[in-house]
Image 1 (cartoon, one colour):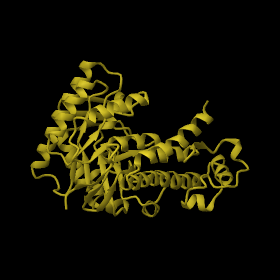
Image 2: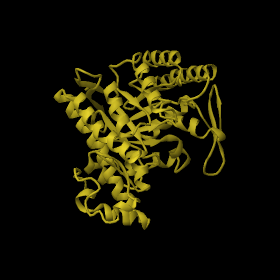
Image 3: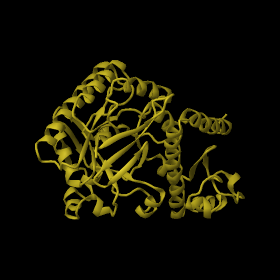
Image 4: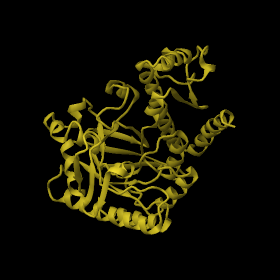
Length: 379
């Protein structure tokens, strides 16, 4: 069976459905992937993720390398066994930390030198050892090392980062072909180029021309204005190989997800659904709500009356507000179940709409409710 198969294409947009096949099962696309940076999706058990329908989650090499260490995970039998997760895992290379931890790292042509956020010790990641370490972790899909840059960099800075990312991509493939990497691990290249269209085109064509199993769109959702995000995304997608799975890194808001599905993106990940849970917020079809708001003090209905998740079937908004205000751990757990269920349902409903041939109308109806409600709350 091929790694990726496109099943259905929407007639009025670039949206499509497909199937990813890994050593740990099949994954229907489009798919939202919860982030389990340190071998755990925050505030939720693997068993609950199974119930919600999750088929793939993320881990992060940078953090797992620092703690508990590659050797410990390898000795445990790999990441799946270590964290008791029997579905697919995508591991990130640590490339985003090149962007987010700019004060404690140095970029060189050979790789990235950084200081540990735990004890300050110095470490060096190269394109080759990043691929080998991800292979040792045992994940199903690995990302290459890349240089993610701030959105407001000039042409020369951005060009250097693009060329370096392309060089690192070639070295990553060389390592994959060397025999030091598991054959069942798929590897994705990453398109960079900042917000300079000619460099986005150059990067997209270069990465698409390499023998990667999939293509990730990196360097977006890094602080730029949202309209610009999708201008650059749509521009970039003109130059990628659409036969391969397409992954938008770091996208997790409902409106953004629908826009990206419309453009032909197959895979998404983001910490947003779990992070806002820990801050007392919840997604609903009528916009995002903050349960700290006093208006929920006497609201004995579910957070979302259209939702069939465990949280909404058993607890009221008033009770959840009480848990949030009391700083109970269960508040994060219950809201995480709801918010992830919301994201999975949104993506599943999008898939059903593509198959039925009415994705454009589905997207319009959802956004009309969601955007109008958001505007009412934030005039």
